[in-house]
Amino acid sequence: DALDDAVAAVGRAVANEKMLEKQLVAKKENAQVWQQKAEAAITQGDEEQARKALMQKVVIEEAIDAVEKALVEARDVSQTLKKRLAELKIKLASAQARQGALSVRKEVAQLRSEMGDHVGIMDSEAFARFDQYCRDVAREEITAQVYAEISGQIDPVLDKSFERLEQKKRVEAEIQALKAKQTQF
Image (tube, rainbow, N blue to C red; front, side, top):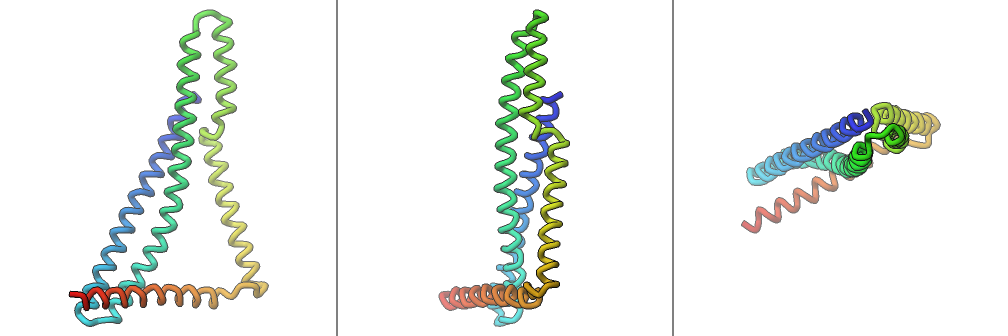
């Protein structure tokens, strides 16, 4: 049962990793599409359309950064779970090889019990608790942010305007790069 639970946990972790990899590829392709649209707009002399396209690209690149970070974490989790699964399989094979006598079967039962303690992270309850923990942390962060906004410590309008300024700065830099690229041809 512990082995089945461990295999299922590894399967979920690897599936999550693959899903994030696909998301990353799709977002990078989408960013490239917006880059091409910006280049086409510059070629046609429509700088405003190029700015809009590059704004979309900047937003997508920010999402790419977040997915890349999540992918690194997912890969770490997958590797850890795979390692623990391999250890569990080795222990299980060893226990099966020593089976036979009643005393050995008792020892195997004790080992399985110990393995259950060591592989607790791999059961679905542990993942459910971890997911709940993540939701609790997110809720606390939102509560803190709302408190800061209400108490006047954070001005969301001001924060948003600085974020837009940063995005516009990146767009302008890319516009200049596109213009420079076009003048080379």
